[in-house]
Image (cartoon, rainbow, N blue to C red; front, side):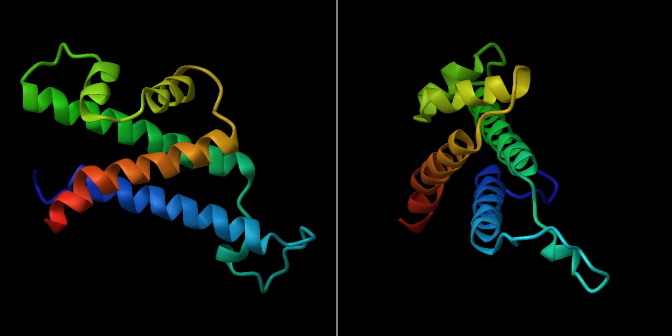
Length: 133
């Protein structure tokens, strides 16, 4: 695959990074919005919209990549995203979140967080645990 990371590794890193960024935002949220010239770009608070957008993008890529892997394994481009994810064991509500993020409004931050945690658990069980065996 030309030096690309396996999808499970890419998604694990992305999801864990988003959850960490969210946790840092929650625990270090400044009480005022004063940004002076000595402020590091990493200290500028991320907005809830930016978090929702990041989570949604990761969930979308996670679901689409999983479906693509199944289509490739089954040698059938005709399989639906939801069918592929169902075969893989991913909860279908995450597929619905991906659909809403793609075609409707971004999901709420709470839904994004739960989706990211559940997706991270999924990749842990389907990739990392198997890798350890």
